[in-house]
Image 1 (cartoon, rainbow, N blue to C red):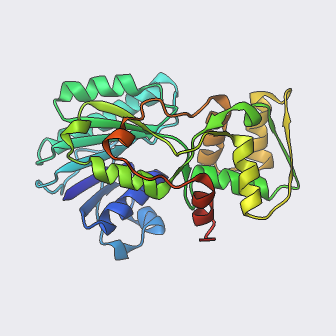
Image 2: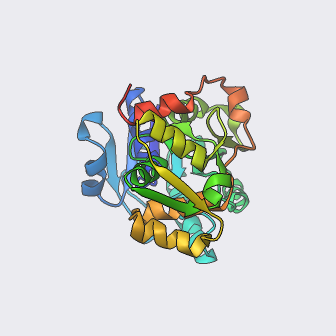
Length: 290
């Protein structure tokens, strides 16, 4: 199957590109910089690359007119100011316009589980006339994922001081390869058209519980304090300047602390009964212990 993917600054997008290529699909990636892309994805996977900028540039040239499925990965921080949503819609509009010149039958829009702008995005895609599926994904467990980076950075601290939300906000982490399996299965499945699905792992836990289980698997001992008076402003300070998270990881950390990331629309599991990896197994894989 011929597949095109946009949003390759996104950790998940790059891994999905590799996953689909390894499954035998012909994968094309629309990116801003080949040099940046190949830092993360070796050329050995045989992924075709087209350089283009959906927001600032013109319609991308060189799209295979036999392309059957398109993925669009949302790269914007969730629930940002309106101008960010408008930028997202402009980029999506250009992407869909380019797809009209191909045989694309299915657009898969992938975003974060915390994204509250999904209804606006769906409304726009519907007006385009394309068959589509929206997928919202919880925390991903995989080497280099935001959640793994956070847990790894925290595990290197002598003393871990975090907001109260760290001990109360719940998550549903899912193994990267399970996400790949779901997205591979739903391509060109008319049963998934026009629907929104949430993807999460088989276990629900607080971030404190997730961190403690991570420490146990990594055989580390740390003292973890969740302080009721810390508040989000200080959490931002700790994330950026004490724990020194990278900008995208710091943004993810703030989102994680503010709300539960629990699956609501779990219809994909009914369509495709996938045996999901438990949390401890996923962590071991991500740490290279299995």
